[in-house]
Length: 180
Image (cartoon, rainbow, N blue to C red; front, side, top):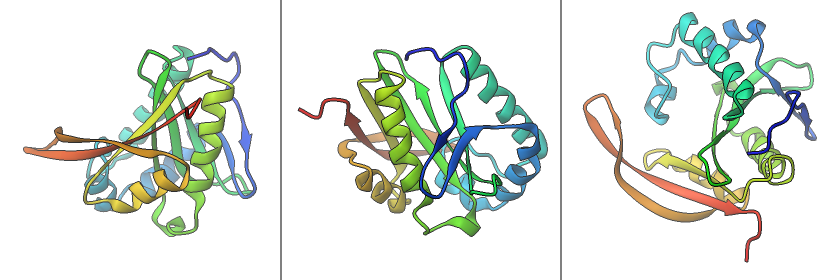
């Protein structure tokens, strides 16, 4: 992953993707109170506390500084955080795409818009070769987002993630810089 000196700001038609900041913590904490986020993701705990949000913002900053990841706040045009999206380095010029969106903003195409911009950024600015993402099979909406942004189904990973005492199959989608 190519190292950038300054955290980028990406603007799309309706959104601004920018670095997380301390002022986002109360919003993040509020959005992630709903147990659905824990049920649909591998790394969002329930209950979600202010301390979780503070740790996540700190880790996101450290990931940028160590060039291992870019976590963007997804903001509306008024620059209020409505979700988050990131690319995290997995070596060999590939990165994992991950995202979440506050429930009031679901089904409006925001994650699709942000993810398309982030894939473009990953290939052009970070010089990645492959970007992939995974989702729990009980969250097919996430798979539809991946398809809309040009990702293709690559593999079903059996019992790949453990959450609590349960093992979950996950589907992996990917897209390549040169689709040939």
